[in-house]
Length: 90
Image (cartoon, rainbow, N blue to C red; front, side):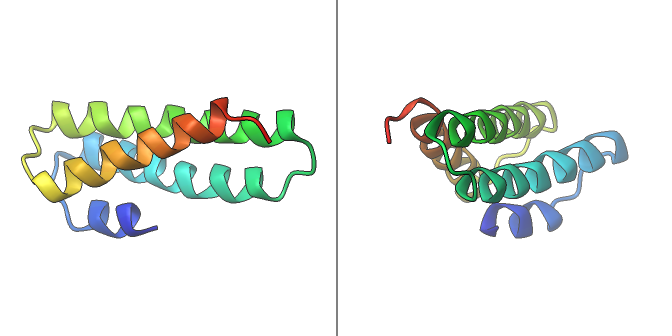
């Protein structure tokens, strides 16, 4: 959720800002929905969608030439965590 709040502070062109906000919300929603699933394959499917949204967010930040090291580090760490969750074993 911290990543989402950081995204809200950015000034980007409208087409990038809207897409980034949707991707950040998708990370939150899919992570929470995945955590609520009962089977490991179902959880991993939602974590994989969240990982895709995290990678999309990184691409948008790069396209928008965002230089905040703190935000980029947070996005990269988030993507790494989601990758492990989506590929992990329960």
